[in-house]
View 1: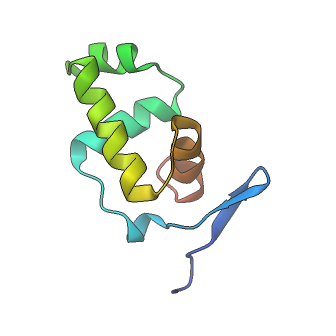
View 2: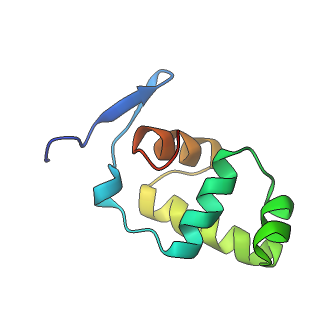
Length: 85
């Protein structure tokens, strides 16, 4: 494990994967940015002109990459890994 693997604990949990450990596609980064702003799948889909299903596919892909199971954990990871402030 390299330095920075355990980055900024959020709440009472620590997020293990750093941003350099995870490759997000450009569309995933866009979805993640809006997710971190508190938007729903429907709102994100409307803004980026994806179907809601496409947004959900991107979220599922990111859950798998980051090893989380829900959107709250994904946002926590994004903040701790520096993808969002």
